[in-house]
Length: 68
Image (cartoon, rainbow, N blue to C red; front, side):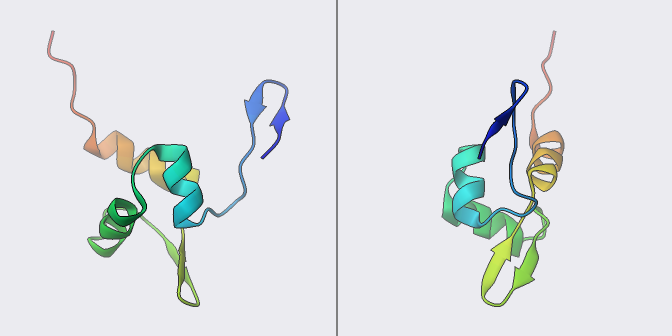
């Protein structure tokens, strides 16, 4: 992963291991979210690939709003 003008670039698709490092979620939790249909993924052989966009979408749906 390289940096370009202050922004990190990521591959188009991420393995569960890469997604775990980026998101801070464990590999097993990511697999569980995929099985439950909460995290989009692309099955490629016996691997599951996801995207940064799918991780951010899950975050937006799962976060708890701040109560002021």
